[in-house]
Image (cartoon, rainbow, N blue to C red):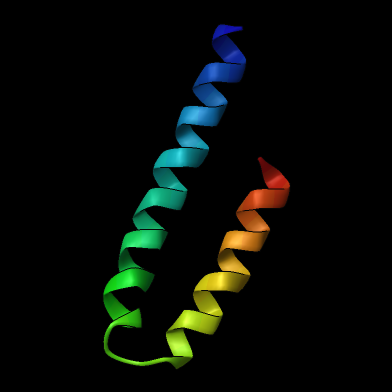
Amino acid sequence: MEREADIAAKKAAVCGKHCQQYMKMDMRADKHQVHQRKETNKYGKEN
């Protein structure tokens, strides 16, 4: 259980950093919004 929790926490932390970056850029340009959706799908499948 601890190992699974640690792995999930690491993935969430990495995904969180990327999501924050894309969300900031998303407000500036719509192109990044499409890229953000692709990244979200990738992390969604991994999790």
